[in-house]
Image (cartoon, rainbow, N blue to C red; front, side):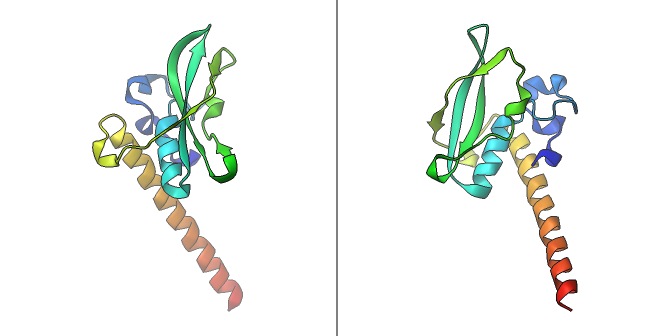
Length: 130
């Protein structure tokens, strides 16, 4: 997932602040959606607060048995506090307006990388069994 992030996959209105020094920045929504595609579970959304003021939202995933996975939490500085999240029902992709292109680009990149890794694992296993 991380190797598939870029400025083109982050939230468009914040694209100018994306850097390779903080690649998780503004990737949370699309990352949570792609992980939901791959592993299922629930989408969780919390608020981001700075100095007690709500400034943004943060998305992550909850899998079975309450296990939470947040691949982009590292994007936040110490002044940014993420509240406890709530479960958000995922709308069908066809209804998305915002972030659809970014989601599709990240999803396609991740799926392609997974296919290449699977092919490499299969080739190695085939060579070892010969």
